[in-house]
Length: 104
Image 1 (cartoon, one colour):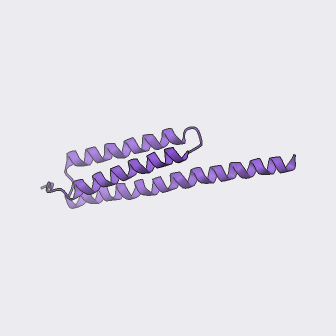
Image 2: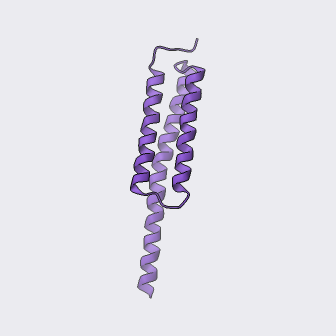
Image 3: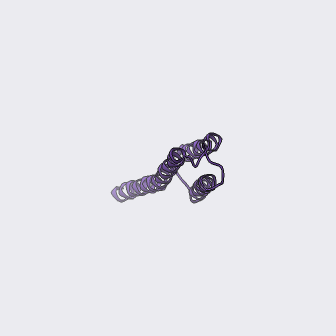
């Protein structure tokens, strides 16, 4: 009985750690992306419409992350899709910051 309880507690701790680790990485990526967007606005590399679109993508990623975490378990597939969406947003930020449009 004690072994079963101990094993179950260990499994729950590992699952919680894996969930936290997966979401901490996404949180760090999102913080970096927000900083990149803010820097682009400050330097004039991003126009108002570009900024609106990028912020919208960030919000979508936040909602996706909340849906994934709602059940308390982040599967490998969910983690893959979260990272894929974060990479798409990152590419969009890069493209918008480096396009010829500038705020005047």
